[in-house]
Structures are given as C-alpha cells and as structure tokens.
Length: 531
Image (cartoon, rainbow, N blue to C red):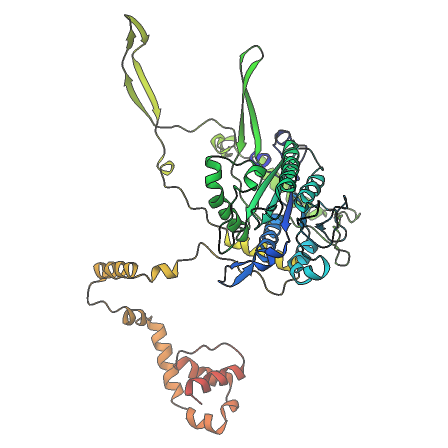
C-alpha cells in the first residue's frame, strides 16, 4: 500500500475523514485539576525557583497556570476544569459544600482552555480569600466530607465523552497526607471507607486519579497514610512514588513549549494463526516536523473567525493578440524538438520506487544435524550492512528557539501581557562552560600547537591586507585633510559651513563611517576630536 507522507503527518482536525486517522487512539484528554484550599495550604511555605519562600497554594496555582499555557500550544483540543475543595463558598452543579468550581463567562465547566480563563486564574490569589475563602472541610462533630464531595464533583465533570475517545484524569494537589486525622475511630473509618469507595467508582468508570503531593518543610508527605489506598499503590510502586511525583511537579513548573501529537495508526497488519485466532500489529508515524500553526483571520472587534472569499466575481482577464502569438511560437518551438532532447524524471527520486542497492555481508552457515538427520542445510547468512550515517550517537533533543519565541509572543498577545516570556536558546554556545579552566587550557594548547609561541593574535587581526587602490584613496584623503585646520573650525563652530564632501574628507582620513546627514557627520567629527 502506497502512503503519502503529507497524509501520514496531517492533523486529525485538518482532515478528520482521512482513512489513516480512522484507527487513531483516544485523541482527547479531559482533566480536572483538584486543588486543596485548606488554611494549611496557605500557611505552609517552601523555597521557590527564585529561592524565595512561597505557599503551597501558590505553587499549585503556578503549576496549573503553566500547564494551561502549554496546553493551548501542545494539545489545544483537550478540555480542563479547575476545582477547589475545603472552601468557604460553594459553586458546583451538585450544590455540595466546600467545593468551588472556578470558571469564566462564555465557557462550560469542562471546556477547552481560553485566554480569559488563564488570565483570570493567574490573578486568583489576590481575590481568593475575599470571594472564595478557605476553611477546613473535615472537622470533628461534622458529617461534611469535602474530599468526598470534591471527587464526586470531579467525576460528574468527567461524564462528558467516552473513555474510548478520551483519556480522563483527576490531578489532586494537597499537602495533607491524613485528611481524616482529626476524627475519632468510628467517624474516621466511615469517612475513609466512603471516600475510598467514591475514588474506586471513578476509577471503574475509566477515570485515573493522580496525586501531586506537596511536602512540608519539617516532614515529608507520607503517602502510605491514606492516599496509597486511594490511588492504588503498593510494593515497589509505593517506594518509588514520592521521587516520581516530585519530578512530575517540577516538570509542570517548567514545561517546554512544544506541540504534542497523538499517535497516528498508519497501517494495521493482522496475522491469522488459526480459525478465530489472529495477532494484530499497528504501525505508527512517530516523527513529524513542527511548524507554526495555520493563520486564522479574526474580526478586530468581535474576535470571531472570519471566512475569506477570494472570488471577486470579476471576469477572468483575457490575453491580447500579441501575447497569444508569442505563446504559440514558444509552444511550436518546444514540440518540434527531437524526442531524445527530453529529459525524463528519475523514478528512484519518487515516493514508492524500488529500494536502493545495499551492501551485504555473507556469513557461512554450517550444517546442523540431530540424531543423524539434517536439521539445517549448509548455506550463507546475508546480513545487510548499515550506511555510514546509520552509525551515529543519539542526537540531543533541543528546543527550536524560533518556534519557542513564536509561542511566547502568541502567549503575550493572547493574555495582554506587557512583557514577553523569556525563552532560552539551547542551541547557543555554552559561554559559562567555555570559561572553565580545563576548557580554556585545552583551547590555549590547541592555539599553541597550531600557531606556535611567537604568534600575536591582536596584531595579526589589526593588520588587514589593504589593496593598492585603497592605499591610494587613503593617501589622497589624508593629504586633502591637511588643507583644513579642523581644530580651529570645530572651536569656532564653522564645521557647518563646510560641504558634505569636505566633511567626508576628514572621516575618510580617519577611517570613520561616512553615512548619515550633515548633522550626523559633524557630530561624528566632534566626537572623534573629543570636542
């Protein structure tokens, strides 16, 4: 089956009816960010990226904001919801206490992230205590269970879509490893049981729950106290959870601006072994170039997409008689050519042509016998030899700096930010590494071995070879410059009385630039003279 590379690497949204995309796996992701808003999240601090202490609530908000900004670029068709629990106010479709679903106008609770959502969520810390509030949702003597309510609301938000077409996840941010630690025996057991059952019900519906723990400065988050049972950790997974969770949190803080693409099933091969038994093998398109997204025309007032109609309903222009005669003469000259004068395309250069010749190694194979019978006859093994460019070290995955800058500008425009986010060019030379003593010593040793001890780099750079014509022009300019008393003219302010040509005589004699208007030339002369 011949495949067109342009079809293999297209996006599903560009051509959803293409036959190669009919078998693609779940292409969407529905995520609910579940953030603990208890007073402990605001009171506990940890060192941030700039070594300043920041609250765990600020860490959670900054992680989510960064994830949303990256998601608009990488997976723009995914849908998200943001939900706080242990809050004073409540806002959810189930009208449950202690749960607040954050949203903005003109957007459903679970929907694609928008610039307005990100912009308002970035500023939520300023108004959180005033508009939403923080309180402990699980207290002795009360039957309220804010964690149970939060899981219920998150599960309800993720009812949208099928697990066959979308991955559904709940990301839980908290620094409380024992949410029911303040309760007594019977109440604690009852709430623990009901909360674990609620989590199991969500997981049975295909919803995965991921914990992002925030450790306190004085003690590490103990996941085995409660959350190991909630997310289903045991054995080796339990021991490796905290390091992997910490790394996941760091990755969310510093995510790369890159577009993520779902796996594309290029073809499916089925091996039929027996009646009713077969093995299927899928092949995928793994690599594709990354380019800026397609341009979308928007109305400057409403910001709604515009449809461009290039048809002006004008009659097609007709060629005049002279143009037709010229074209006819050219066509006639082409078609009277000999057949051997035409060049035909090389079929090897076209997609789908036969494979190129390849070098192979022939390795002799001995006869294999068993119990006097021949199992394998003697022969030759044919081993394909790799080309020289097939044997190479793994390349480092570096970001495309121009594309990173493009995404940063788009983010600043969409969020109306005054400053463009800083991007790091990973392809630039490592200036700090080049100043290490070992590197400097190696560079000096190389220059010594190439140029020797008597080489003067500065004098060699200053002695550029000048052509004979250049030397003559400079001599003429120097002689002409002697006709003027430049210092006296500058002191009396009479340089402005000279022509532009006269001023350029001085500039040429002293190897100064001669571009610009008369005022610029005078300023350049005065600067050179120290006036």
